[in-house]
Image (cartoon, rainbow, N blue to C red; front, side):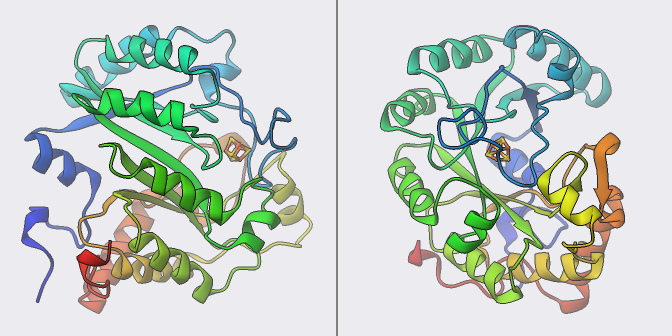
Length: 316
Ligand code: SF4
């Protein structure tokens, strides 16, 4: 047995680029959008203060002043990718803070605005597991009938003690409920997890991976815990109270996680972006290409691939 032929790629995991090519026959680019949302874990709906690693600044666009309309953000992003990458089709990625934290009417207006733009073929909506009431899922299900729709859940860990330590403001049970209510609606689910969370063992993150492997989840984003200035975590890191993981540890753990995940689960990201002006550590994380190359090399060294240690797919 070797890596699955349906990936049609030279990698040892099912990356997003290969998924786009296999599904649509062409590249697709995600255009990040800041639609002006807040977060229930910051505005008092769930809690104040937010997750301990969250800088709370929003996008660079938001920091620069009044936000341009969604349509304008898409026009600019589309022009950039057309020029730089000769891109043709796009997903509107509602990325900043919690993009379902609003009335269904407001959400519909924003998503409609995005989908009305030329060459926008779908949506990817970043949110929290405790912020997807059925009315929001009904709305996304409507779009999913003839558009490509992803819902991205920040989870980070399946362990309640870790979620509490991070001040996430939701539980693993709320995540499992959100995934169960999203399933069967034609909406693809992508889950974000973090390697190196305070108090987590290697066994803990492998347990997170095993749980995700058993769920109707179609995508994953993984990154290392990053310490940022101006965050609770950053302050603890600066005082030496919290350690971040080494590159070797991160690479090895990501490979262990990939081995456990189903081979058809789309790996959307294996590093984190941005934050240059407030970045504290770990120092190796700024060189994303080196990290990705190290993951490729480690999988090669092991002669392993995504799913080589996952259970049968009918478990899902
Ligand atoms: S849920 Fe996301 S936006 Fe909200 S506080 Fe946590 S990291 Fe920040």
